[in-house]
Length: 246
Image (cartoon, rainbow, N blue to C red; front, side, top):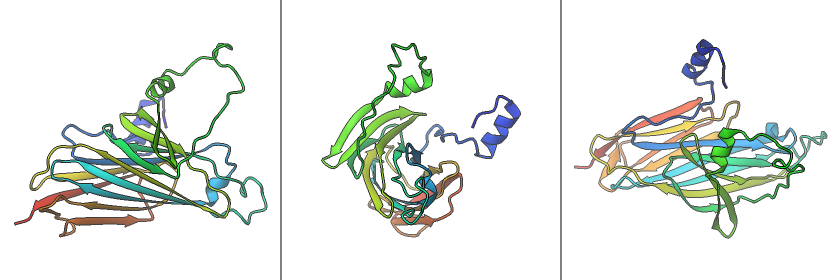
């Protein structure tokens, strides 16, 4: 969301309703996630699609984070009479992660060939510089035999994207594994997990993170911290404190 009026823009930013992407401060220690769905030629099916995301993380003593993200989408519009509801949900699904992330596995994503009906270059169409900057970082990935993904740099984040389509009455599952490197951990270090929710969307979300060997989380009293909710704020920030076992 963007306003030319600076006061309105400031209000949207302060209330976290501008849809902006979280920018990590200097010396940030933690993880970031945002899941963005784009319904493209999927009718009005989003209203009948329920989404659940589960992120399982492991933090090592040297600061490396290994993530397994499982997203389930259930299409419950199979009994609707209107064709724009009882229709395949075609979702271009984007996963925003820390800039240094590397995708190691993806299962459930599909590719889709789109043939433009117009030759934009020959017909002198203008290109958007922001879109061009993102597309210039685009890389096609095949992280597993049954997985297709595209990779971008966008808004300071590493983005993994794929087509995640679900037929009426069916359930689709997307499983993604990725990792990134951070700073070595220490006693009393604060690890912050941030999740930006897509504006206007809802989903069930679960998060679990395992502390490095020899450490535990102060908030849970064990090496495992869990969080679960069906009502996400616009931005979720979980601050966790590492404690060294004595």
